[in-house]
Image (cartoon, rainbow, N blue to C red; front, side, top):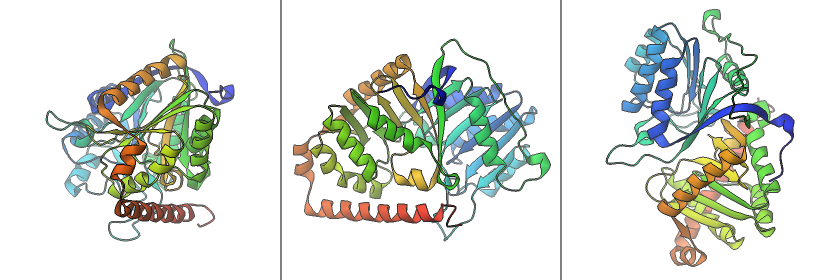
Length: 389
């Protein structure tokens, strides 16, 4: 992969990979307990279960020792919190609100969603990934956790994360005492000296940085790509870029869910299997649990970790955040982790297997699901565009 322009990436970072709930949740609790001045905590889902309560308890502890805590949760993803739980949060001194609480109809919403999962502490460190705060992401002795990743970063790009979090928190009219006024101009530089860039998708603000970085990765890839994608439904241009990359000899491995919590999306993705396989792109399905990861590595040099799903719902209907890492040592280690998961926990879908399990009924259901989701994407693009408002 060609090196991106230097001005896009900043050096001097320390990065720690967090794989699954086993490392993610203890790390989040630890950094919350170490916070001294302020916390921005923004997520799509915080469930009122053991995991959600444990994380909220850490936020409450921070607020009670004088840390300013800004808690912003998506109104649709986190719509089942009880009044008692919300009262407990607000009574602790946490500044709390829901993002975009206006519903179009009961139980369904098409407005822009806050989908990223970000924890920012004191403007000095940020955790960016795809893991929500619920039991299913932590797992138990009897149930394997959903597979997902996050990255803990320290260094200059925390300034950008701070600015994004402040902008989203201060988006609506708030009383002066509730507004986030913390500004960070610079941070320490770290010996690990990793180059990275924090990117976001926010169609309403004409930002499609993550989608553009994926397109660049597909165009510039030279050797191999590994993609773990929970809800994979690339658009026509992206499918063309996949095909062109494969034609020039790039070894592309796409890891998808064997079983999904979103059956319609799974059927729509399966509808694309024939196209993918026909273009000599390898498909693997992950079996131990639900695959919720959204990560990619390219040529052992570049990788991206975050909340962005490879589909136009993430492009047009959600606010997303990823961290793009341009570092050979980090990416090579990450690739080893992903390849180990492929070897141990995945099964390759060959052309023969696909044809064997494909019937006229499954193809019809897949086509129908694909067309319905494409229609939804068009509606989202119209409803979240500034022109429509």
